Image (cartoon, rainbow, N blue to C red):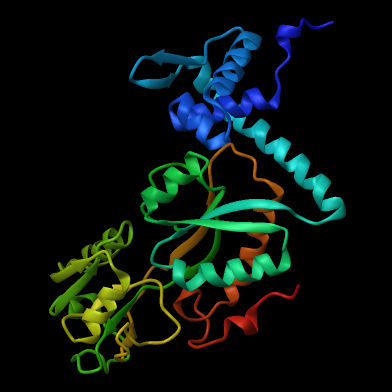
Length: 324
């Protein structure tokens, strides 16, 4: 018969993961909505049961994982995921999927895909409440690794960590002009032609690096006139004929935020498509909710309009929503 000190419970594991993520017992207590002393006792109980210190406690410097703590953290996350999956399965038997799911999405594409995904997913699974994180590659990678979101829609360019990814669809970069731009009436344009005109750069990772990489591959250097992290400001500057731009995502209407017309022109030659992937942290088992959302993305995203997935411009999201 096991000694009582060998017993580990989920509350202890949950407190350990929250303390590791928050860097302090205080942050863990806020996250779990319990007292700091309750978190400290739970972590101490886990350390006693395992016979190892999981944190270095330094006054004024918060918590730092020991080697044993680092080794345990992934398994602890998986244990909590398994426990949540068991609860979700029990709920699904009688009530369908339940609970909260946080997903990530690349900033430039979020307005084009996230609302449709959220609205149709919640309609299909009314017991699940979706939340989201949106931002650059670095923001989404950190959110996945820190457990702040389970899944993220990302471009498969400029990734810094070895995430688990699944390709959902591909988008082909294109040039964007004001109607009066001298290249706007071309059936297609080369990067060499574009290099002779002023360029408005979208300064968001990894899109900016991808833009510059396209020019470098063609052996030319763009004449950057303006650069901004705002997707809509880029399109508005182009609509005012203050330069052209290269983009990957394409809204449903070729007009700027001000309502001015824009002209999208394909790039000449063989331009490598950019894959949009569904990513998750390595070694972390997805919950039932995350698996359901992944299946939903596989079904819905290829049907969405415009440059999001290559469908017809102006198609209605309502017309491609999956059947309940």
